[in-house]
Structures are given as structure tokens and as C-alpha cells.
Image (cartoon, rainbow, N blue to C red; front, side, top):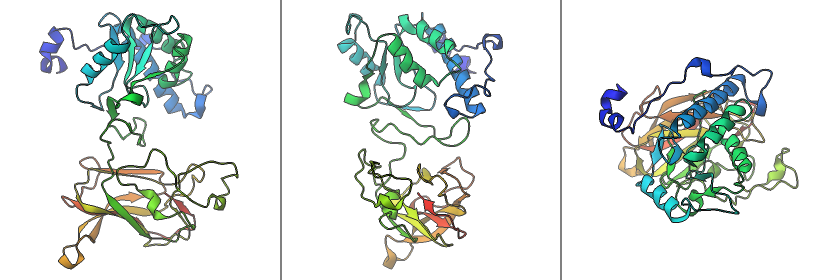
Length: 353
């Protein structure tokens, strides 16, 4: 099917599909006993195979072009991204570029993970060999840093620090289950754009740890300067430096809620919520629901929430995610005015969000 749908690209040599035979793969069932980074056996196996897959792909790609860039199938791309890379390389990092006598080895066109990493093809085999040699030791995005230092590039060339990132990871669902909510803050339009809205709630909170910290219109600031009484948390010492507060509730009762009311009706495509806190990981919502409401029908209640409808159950989970067209329950309205997290059963545990 790929060949028939992309016949011109295949004939021109611009579309390649490869399959590595099973006998080329070394043992990847290595955890236990080797479980580096305290990863679960399934993750160690997955990341080890990923290193091997990338190594085979890089080795195959060496003769195809002067440069190789690592991308995936669930990315958003900046406009004219190829031209931007060409201009960046030809303007500063051409074939005669040297820093202390050493050419560049890799350029970052994306901040997160292994995507958007550009290599010179004549060094690609060395990167592939490095992945093969240490495939079972650490993830590829950490291995590439070790490889760069071994190749005498001690400082990353980070395009995204002076210009917008060229790629944004669109996938939220992890291959091994769970969610991956991190986004490229410098890409431009974020996957979760946090439309303008205000947060309210009915919940007994630890003083200064208010509902307002669960949501920031337009996304959380890059540098948070929140003010909370961290002395109320035994997990924080006197020398801890943090400026990111959170919602922290106690005496959580049935019917308690945190509600986000948008400034205008919004066509909601996805809602992501996290519970717990790195210092208080057990402070989860034990029994709850994610609900949405359209605008109240009465003109006298303009801007208020109408009747709420459940779209997702929450059962002591650290992350929950609803997505239009993917999740089991559909969005009941074309446009929503409110989203709320509702407590459906009282709990003795505190809740952090």
C-alpha cells in the first residue's frame, strides 16, 4: 500500500522502507537483572529495541544524503522547516565549520527527547555503532549526549534557543501506556493552548495552596513566582527553592469540585489533568469524574455553566486524559463553557493537583 500510494517518491529514491531481520537483534530481555534508571522490565526492553532500531536505520541512511534528521510520525512541523534548516546550516555550520579544530556532530532543532536531532551523514555510522554498543544501558536521548562528548562536541548547538523549535510532538498516549504531556514551549502553538478562563472551586484547601494554581490561561509561565507557605509540607526543607505552588486540599468531600469557566464557548479537543505532587505522590483523587457543561441557556445567567455531563471517570490516577474522537465518551456539546473535576466519594487522603 505504501508503495502504491507513494509511487513517484519510491521511483525517485526519496521513499525507503526497511526491515531488520530478527537475527540481527541481540538479547533485549535483560531486566532483571540489568534494570538501569530503575525502569520497569517492559520499558528497558522497549528502549533497548528503540536504540537498535535507530542504529539500523542510521546505518542504512548513511549513503542517501549529506545530513540525517530524526523525526517521528506524530509530529507537528513548523512552516518551511526544511528551508529553515538549510539556511541555518549553510549560514553558520557549513562543511568548513570548526570549533577548536572539530566539526559539529549534532544540531538540536527540537528541545525534547530525540526528535529534531540533525547529524552529518559521514559521522552517522559512529552514532549507530555507539547505540549498538550501549543499547541496553540508557535511553537514546541520553546516549547521544555521551556520544557527542566522546566526539569532542562539548556544547550543544541548540537552534530552538535563538529561534522557534521546528517540531512539536503531537502524541499524548505513551507506547507503553500512560501519557506524555510535555510540549515544546518554543514551537509556537502548543498542543494544549489553555484558552482564557478562570478557576473556582468548592474545596477545603491547605492555606495558600489555592485552586488558581491548577490552570494558567495560555499555559503556565516559563518562570513561576508563586507564593505559598511551603512550611506546611514536611517534604520541603528550609533550603528548598521552589516557586511553583499547587492545589492542595484536605477533608475532601463528596460533591467538592474545581471548575474552569472559559471566557467564551470553546470547541474542546482534549483535556489533560494531573494529580499528586512530586513531593506528595499519594495525594490523589480517589474517586471522581471529569465533567463538561455548555453555557447556561438562560440569558440572565450569561457566561455561567449549564448542566454538567460526565466524560471521564477518575480512580486514584496520577494522570487522566480525554480526547475528542479517541476517548470512550464523546463531547456532548459542540462547544463547552466549563470543565470541572468532581469528587464523587469522600476520602480521608489529601489531594494535590
